Length: 453
Image (cartoon, rainbow, N blue to C red):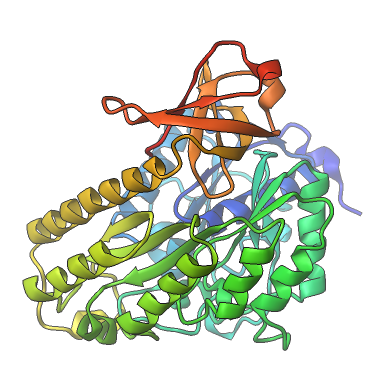
């Protein structure tokens, strides 16, 4: 039996860098440590232990990691510093050399509570525990908590694709998941904890089922039957894995929202080939058109990377024209940065950094145009909005079924509630959409919704 008394005076704080998957894992670590007797506090409160969950996607990963470590030590110079996550898996020795770090945990070790049961005192030299993630076949389920309204549920981890620009397979290992039965149980637990909406997340969620002989389509059909949760959303899913069966199911579902997030990365077939992606622009266009057919009001977000090696001006223009013609809602634009140990470094043509930024600005402008156009389509219509907690001293926000973001004066009656509202219009000056609440909830005649993020 664990002696919890040794932790009674221990406080722990967390800082998460990177993706929704990291947030779900941080929440799980926090719940486990609270069960061990730790008290969770805000990062700024001077905790005894700091856990920093890192990312490896951008070139600023190391800089952000160092800054966060120094910030923690400024708050409490004697704090025990734990660094984990993707950057810790890829560069454990580099992190261990940062002054003040006590423990470095790799991707496979981050959820192992045994590392927190020892003596959590400052160490002269950091301990490193980062195993060979490529050989790991275990799957550690997790779901985010802290916001009882919307929860990120980890359904899959790792990736078998090895795209030329990406380090994620090196940091996360091969594709793996729990069974549908076990995943459904996690969703039920999140629902019982108060989550009204669950976002399915992972590294490559469409690949769900490889080790268990199941499929992602089978998973979402099982989750549809979970009574404890009212809404589900599918996070980023590869276009080659987004089948017509999945799209049709969402179209007929009462719980899965009409919302898709699909990585394109480039609208140029030669660049997609250099990236080692598993589709071409023809397949991607067909997927978008299929969604438009079955779910004409769906929100469709698309990832795109600018300035990758090999992307000439002509190839970038192909991407811009391709995206301009697609009936999508928003772009998530990433500026390419070279990552160590990736195959992309072998491509000779390198785009100057200023040119990468210029191309990103162009696509950000295209994204704003498409997002505004999408919002304007729904002026004068009705929507069901799930309202979240207070987001500031005066405001709260929520999301409609198809991811229209609304914001209104705080009203405690709305928290974690799904409410029918009327979408009024978008202000040409502020970019705000106005909504009308049911009479019983109206505290002022018009509430404002923030249409842009």
